[in-house]
Amino acid sequence: MITMFHKKIHIFLFSATLFIIIILFETSNAVSINVVSFGAKPDGKQDSTKHFLSAWSSACKSNEASTIHVPQGSFLLKQVTFWGPCINKIDFKIEGTIVAPSSYVSLGSSGYWILFMKVNRVSIYGGTIDGKGDDYWHCRKAGKSCPPGARSISFSWSKNVLVSGLTSLNSKSIHIAVDHCKNVVIKDVNIKAPSRSPNTDGINVQFSTQVTISHATIMTGDDCISINQGTTHVWIERIACGPGHGISIGSLGSYSNEAGVENITVTDSVFTKTDNGVRIKSWAKPSNGYARDIEFRNLIMQNVYNPIIIDQRYCSKRECPHQSSGVKISGVSYEHIKGTSASPVAIKFDCSESKPCEGLKLHDIKLVYLRGSGKSSCTNVGGSSTGVVIPKSCF
Image (cartoon, rainbow, N blue to C red; front, side, top):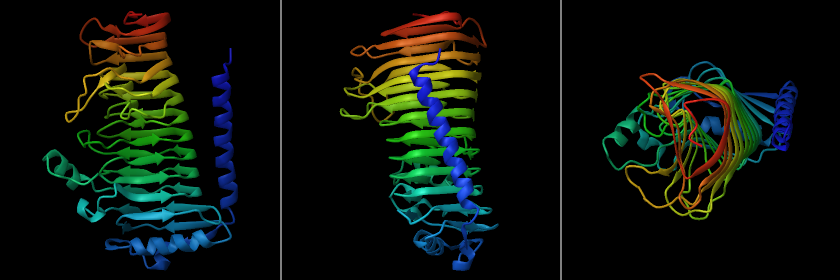
């Protein structure tokens, strides 16, 4: 039986596919702009920031669609913002590598390295961006006073964005950030940072709608993908996650007045030796936030800690409120999830005392603990289970 939610998802996927087809069609007659022609140096040493901005300015003012070429070689960029709106569509075709300064001080305290702001119909194809995060991670681990970590590539207040075939290495913070955007497709990306690199989320989405993330390989030190407040209609499929902290919704409830998260699907993905599998987390303090209409299905867990987890007592080393979470979690389904758990509790639902979880569903779950009998744990939760559920459901 096809639910209204599935109908919405099918329409959403059709729209995303149509968006890609339109992009490919329009690119065929694009004006070609090479960053080297504007003075950019492919030696990885000389600052090419102003030359990239000149190329962008030329493309942004063009009445025709433009393609900005970044040829083979290594191009050093400091903090840069590509502002829109522009007159027509712009593609970045990257064959080389864009590198950040090794010293985090060179990027200032904005929290961004490469930022696209208020753009429409912008596509990034191929190439590598190297955030050179090692220096910043050492600052964090040493407990020093460090500026905000710079996200490698960000899209803010934008729409109709495509990122395809990009490799992101060693981001100082989040690799790819999507904030206040509509109609974004991220596909065939490779993201890599050491497993102990702090706060290096692979892809972070907040205050955005109609986002598709597919065919991605993510190996990093924090969440492979994190979905934060104000985000709706997200489709995530064919993700290879690990090492990392899994795919997370949250942390939610940071603010007392907060936009909710809904209509999220994660499907056909593999988690390998991650600290969590699929997780919903919220701070243990008052909030009007919510997470609802969420589906996790067709997933494989390979030696994963906490393969299925809701944690409404989330806290950090710096902050642990020890209150009752105000975030309402409802309508969450887990279907066809199989594999091995590295922790004895393979299914853990630790929900809010003041706003218990409702409408959770388990169907066809087989998660085997590697060192004995696994179990499930439920606190303040209502739900149902059908089919074979291993470990035995606690509903």
